[in-house]
Image 1 (cartoon, rainbow, N blue to C red):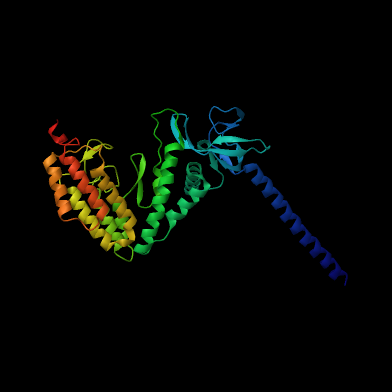
Image 2 (image 1 turned 90 degrees about the vertical axis):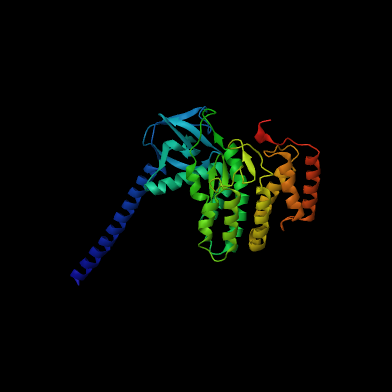
Length: 353
């Protein structure tokens, strides 16, 4: 009986000891995590009052200083030199171990405990939040990960992407703080989230080759038809650009109309065929048509070909109108032909006159 009592007491103390050891380990782990922070500085950097390089420093931080995420990013990417390297990152709201808060340049910090791949993903999320805001950044990430199995899904996804594109291009236009006017940001990382679109000459363009590759893996033929149309209309790298097939390029961004070469009529015929075969993409095909008609109807437009060739191609279009043209559009082309016949446009630029 005495031995049984001793055994019970021993077991109780042993159990208590385990709990004490566990509590001590948790206390140590908590202190260790508190000392580590969410981030650490990777270069000497100032914690500043505002997200600007000219802002008053709160304190200077050495390499390896722990910081906590204060859950805010600047509404832009800043180009700042660290040594000889120009980095494009947002400013991040941070808190020190002793409770001071301020802004630190994102290129001078890294998250604690993440792999290289996870760190790269963390940086991209912060950049997108800075450029596009949290809501649009989340929408872009969800759009980029969407599973597309049918041509119907691709058509809906494309409409969402084109709506996002406008917001993204505005952000790229106004969301960059350059250290000097000639500084060009490296934003190639953004292509990872653009699916069948690509950064292209300062904007975001549809890549019809990528769209075609994706269309070949889906059920249905309408997305294939649309991709083929885009490849035909934009032969330069198959990228949607300011230089479609119906213009004569003067530079990467400037052109004159090439009406009279036969390209307008051929393109309209292809658009009419695509509207019949790919009605899911009607709004996008109509957008192409509007751009082509504007090239003809703009009274400020200059023309590469001589006037007789312009009139001849317009006569062909009006004699056998492509199925994509409605009555109002045909009437507008008839009126434009009359204006051109009166010599009310600059034509025959190919002659150098």
